[in-house]
Image (cartoon, rainbow, N blue to C red; front, side):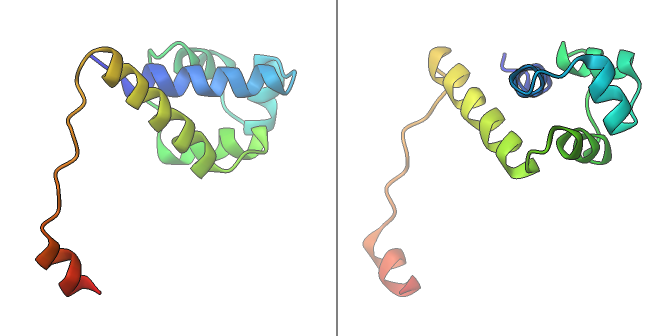
Length: 99
């Protein structure tokens, strides 16, 4: 099973480490408890949208970039687990009527 919260935690930890930040520094900048950030990074807690926004601001990274990275990680895990489906072909009549 692919766990979004675990992959989100991996992405956030990688970003923090790339920036050379400690958990303590991120905690102070984001105004979120160190223990809670640690649990998020380990995939043990879900991050609310407000908390995620605070972490992204403290890491100086757009939320869209974090979500894109998590989405890519989810796709890789799904492919590895054989959970992906082939794209469904769109009938030409639907494509032509949209134009």
